[in-house]
Amino acid sequence: MPFLKKREGTFNPFSILFYLIVFCLLVRAILPYSSTSIVWFPIPNSNGFVKTEYTLTVGEKIRLKVKAKNVRIQYSTSDFKVASVNQSGTVYAKRTGVVIICASYHNMKFNCRIRVVDS
Image (cartoon, rainbow, N blue to C red; front, side, top):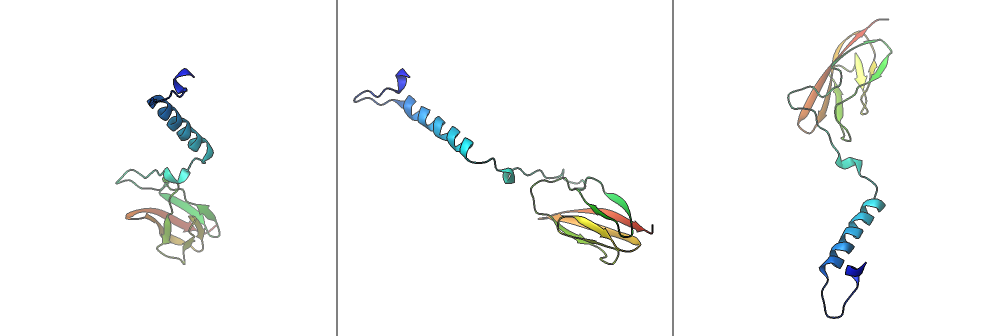
């Protein structure tokens, strides 16, 4: 490329720009795409669960889906005797009753109602 030829005693700003662009493209190609920087938060004043109500039979389990990606969500249950939940969002139905599963991320909290019935 003729504009990249170095001439004695002259400053070529295009060569700096060219090398900067090449450097950025190389960094982008070498480093993997970071999915941790992509975070989708639910719309405010709406529930963060994909579905807000489930009916399970005793002994059944289900994994709750949340409208957020790549965030660490804390799950809790209102009554662990009726249904328990682990940190991946899997709910285990133990005995008949109604329980509220709460998912929280920072100051956002979302509820899902689980009704457990006999088989």
